[in-house]
Image (cartoon, rainbow, N blue to C red; front, side, top):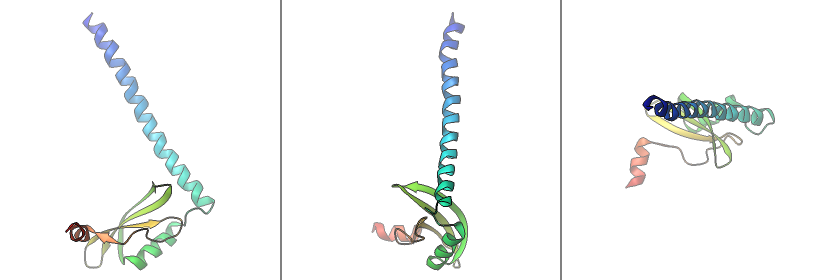
Length: 114
């Protein structure tokens, strides 16, 4: 009897976990497909144009790059190590190549909180 109750509880949870895992994977794939489609139709700039625009704003080495959807717009989020060694998070609008907000880093965040 205990085994039957255990199976009634565990099997649906395992099925849900597998379904959830598959759903999350497809959502990520869907974002990738949407980003590719936006690039193909000219809705976002090519990566080399984004990197050139970012280098004008924040000279340094790009350490990490993410393309995300924020408020209906594609935004490149770049993490750049400056020549002085500081790590700066810099966002660039993927359609225009412009920074939607001023460039900042962790030290600037602390200054703004004062």
